[in-house]
Image (cartoon, rainbow, N blue to C red; front, side, top):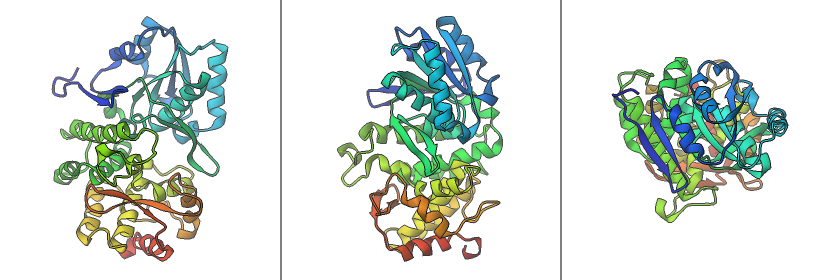
Length: 375
């Protein structure tokens, strides 16, 4: 274990713990608990070698079924889920058996959905291997797959038995993957913990696997999500513990309405954190045009995401779409109600709220402000 980074345990309400540290595979039997005989390890196919420490621990205690998944969003389909269900059935998995996921956010989403749906729910432990998965997908119990209509439109709430965030795995990520994960970290700074923004802005450059700030940023982002999820597990609204008027779990979707539309338009080639960064700046533009935030907070969005190495304009790189091409996907966003578009915005730093039915001209003007020439 890395002595410079002690193990930290963050409870998600009274339901389960997120353990953050180094070389954490030995925690798996504790999280899986008593009575488990078979464990299905669902892992991103390209990560087979990295999964060996997890497999070594599991085979000491359980009958292990290892199922390699397609990489990235290609894993999140009904066909892949069905292949997993068939494999579980063939091996005789019962309700007392369990699933362990090992991979990024797509693996966590798919594996969690398989666990939620097999026999109406079996135990699952997540071992996220990317920054994005550690601070977002693995925590909170949201599972899902994609359809032709959009991202994560089929899924279930299914809380894990535990989450192991092994920081050692982040050193294996390509630099652009780690940077993309910072999109969700910076988002947490705007919706709940401004100290995250201060840490990112004070860094000498984009955060890397060797940055001394990385462990604290992971812990802070996980604490943000843990607190919000514990208060509003199934996204039914704000809770007293979050303060009057707080939108509850929907706050975690800051930047996601446009972000998911951009991802879908790109054929899921654009990384989630990159799209979320653009989406956050978009809703900041909407909020500023609606008189909800001032110019300084709007500008800070661009500064913080740019400092983290994330995109702040759209079109960006090889990715481009018009407002009219994206509005259809935004209308089937999970926050939409009927024909009413709803956006998670800020009423000030760390003051999230829902803006329902903004004027379409504001939406168009905010989108136009994302163009590189407009900045």
